[in-house]
Image 1 (cartoon, helix red, strand yellow):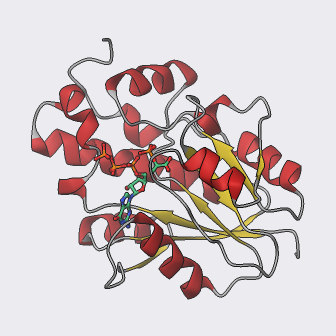
Image 2: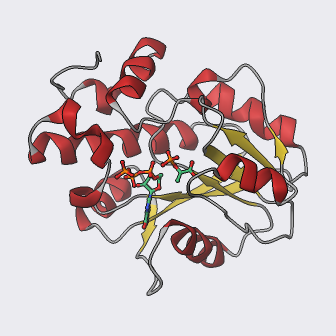
Length: 207
Ligand SMILES: Nc1nc2c(ncn2[C@@H]2O[C@H](COP(=O)(O)OP(=O)(O)OP(=O)(O)O)[C@@H](O)[C@H]2O)c(=O)[nH]1
Ligand SMILES: C=C(OP(=O)(O)O)C(=O)O
């Protein structure tokens, strides 16, 4: 279907991922397990979303690639150029899709109905969903036939707005709740995190 989107989900190597969450996890094994679980819940929700045709992850971590394969998701190794935006451009080029998007891998409360509603709201337009703080970006959608042109990083919400993307601002708390800190994890847990993240015992999600 022409309106469907193919999504690239970037996942950092687990031993480097989610450094701001270290206070909630405590030890490296639990930390890596949580970083992986966040990505698995995000991808599992995306796979169940109406309007999403395909999901690929960009990761050079074999543990991530193996777990994604178990979900039926292909993984592309990171390109020679480092960084999140290079990884996303690489994934988008791999997909060769008419309509491509980027979904962050740290949305463990993501509800398929909320992602589907955001995709519908975007219609055929370049669009982005800001995180709950309003500064970062959780979802970026290219217009059909256009490059993804990702501008993730500090202040990416305004960078995406400047690039011509419209803001997707519906009642979609699960799509806006990226988990960077223990406080974010507390908010996501209150919304209802997915089965993989629920199994990880963290030290504390309170400040
Ligand atoms: N493949 C890939 N993914 C990345 C890279 N940098 C960030 N990501 C992913 O992009 C998403 C958003 O990144 P952040 O929220 O900053 O996550 P993070 O870098 O793991 O967290 P911090 O260490 O706390 O900054 C997460 O899903 C990361 O896994 C990268 O260089 N390559
Ligand atoms: C890289 C980003 O993620 P975060 O702000 O969550 O680090 C971003 O939102 O552009």
